[in-house]
Image 1 (cartoon, one colour):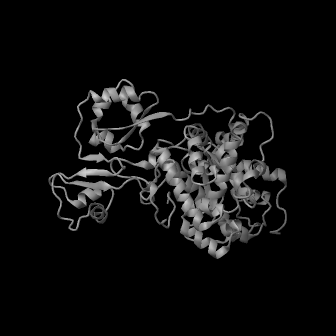
Image 2 (cartoon, one colour):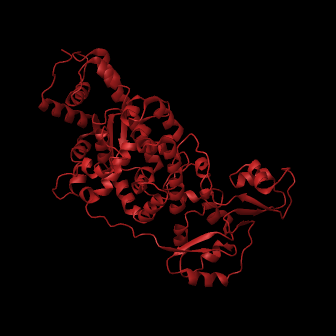
Image 3 (tube, one colour):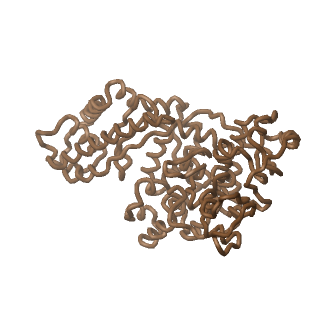
Length: 497
């Protein structure tokens, strides 16, 4: 009885729609049914591009074979479902989609609404897992089954899975929900063209495939202002611990938010990982999971990446790590076929700017008087200068590289020459190192904490033998030259972990 076909296709559809209406409400269920219209409105009637064709030129280094289901799922996440649409699905079989819930509003820039929806969606996921577990305990012919139970059975049957209690017991631990990112992907697509050509050049200059630049879609939607909840920053979502091996990150300067310098850092990091791993699916995944975790996986399960994803067991190798590689391939496919999914897109113009190195320190109030560029625009051109510089210290230190709108360099330099320089304890040397002039009452521990480094590092950089012997007026190196030219050991976690 448990293995028999329980429902006709028509009954499967009816039960699914009943369940959607019961859980979502009539208006939301209707919206869920018409969700495909988000994509169809952008299409011209042509058949959907086949990702096995659009990714064929990459398949030797970046094989898609074995990940077709995952890639198809992520294409839908990027193109079909917007941020109001929440997809409840199985974590292992991404073709097993239980329902699409439509929320009344989005959550970006609304922490209260985000928390409200998070709690609601967690409850909905738990309820779904409970119903699946009950089917597994009670059996498929139990009189205790409700329409909600039967709608879930119908979804599982439509997927062609074995209708046995054990199936539902297994599924009950694997329910996950995914918010759509169609709108976010489009915004990232628009932004990407500001820097994509230069980013591709940087990857090629490091001997890497230029397609890796499109990982920016998956990492941050090409948002150099992006900050994760765990402290990763910029387009390439480096954590401070990893980023400091390649960039300057301190109270004044955070090069993780400089798209070009961060891309050089990402290229270095990826190259180091590929030298360890030797296979691109492992290298790409290492950007999320870390190189040493992927090295363990490679040694245990060999070079067949599909087998590794299915077999490798690690507490930290979860859904995000398992899906990082196929989501990257999906992002590449969508980027290459954006007209089909989104229609014509008005891209941001490629970034063009002048750069000057400040000979003196200048107060923010002086920069606000520049006629060639207003202060808000200046901040947008210089995301590597931290909020502390703009709002608390309020002095741009001497030696800092300042980016300006293209064509304004001469006018700005002339205007700055009329301003009285502002003293600051911080300067940036010609080699890129950052210097701090000790003030009365400073300790080496306080200085180290202020610049995000250690007392031991300060002593090494400055040839100090006693951490207590510093004096007012002493000039200390608080950050060495940019580490992009240095080699360093790769740590155990990816930049965004």
